[in-house]
Image (cartoon, rainbow, N blue to C red; front, side):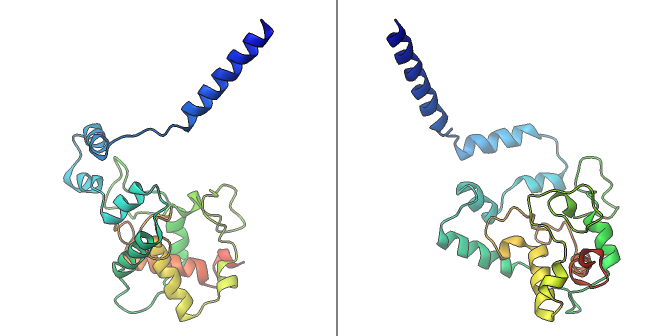
Length: 204
């Protein structure tokens, strides 16, 4: 009897393991239909955001791990889409950058579109030592300017990463702030200053 019970337990355990390893398969059409039916009365500006562009589709298809050739195409495409500041400068006001980086306002149901949108950066990064609550999905940015310096090349690199992280890393978890028009070029310049300016609390 004991042997039978042990055998049954092992069989159930193996069956459970096999079931856990099975991947759910949902057709793209079924997924698209489910998403569309979930929000049937969105205003036009929000409805447009329901449509994936080529990069979003690629990252979804490959579960954020695209093969090398697809990743290269994503990086090239996203780099080409970056809108640079009209004045050619990449550093703005770090105080404005701090205010925006610590704000999660905007693009939610009920948010006033006339008010400034924040980057919600603290949700993923530690940015200054005085912060008592911050996310860890992204790396800590404490001392970012001290480590990276403040050259023109560094400023441009930081601008590009904030404007469109997928211009650096395909299927990055970081939002495409510039590409999706969440932040303007002027706002992105302020964020660059917040990261790199020696007077910013990030570098204290």
